[in-house]
Image (cartoon, rainbow, N blue to C red; front, side, top):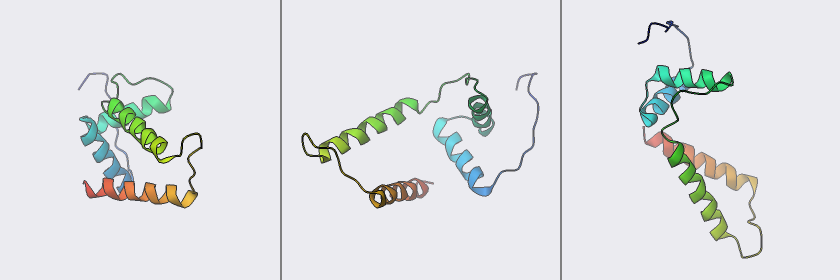
Length: 100
């Protein structure tokens, strides 16, 4: 730990603690580093280290868009409804929770 570090003790909600642990594990960083990066992003500064999952996240977005494109008919926009999107989000959330 650098000499310019200041120790802080904070309270967070249980679900925030679980999320913090999951983020730290997924990114291979300490919980403290995740918090430092969040502060930098919130303050408009830049994090010293790039997010290690950024390439994987981008690939996931591209794959999602490609799947949507394939579902639509040529020349016509993909049609969706709000309930479909909510159901998809809930399924993704449940899948992510089952990995823990």
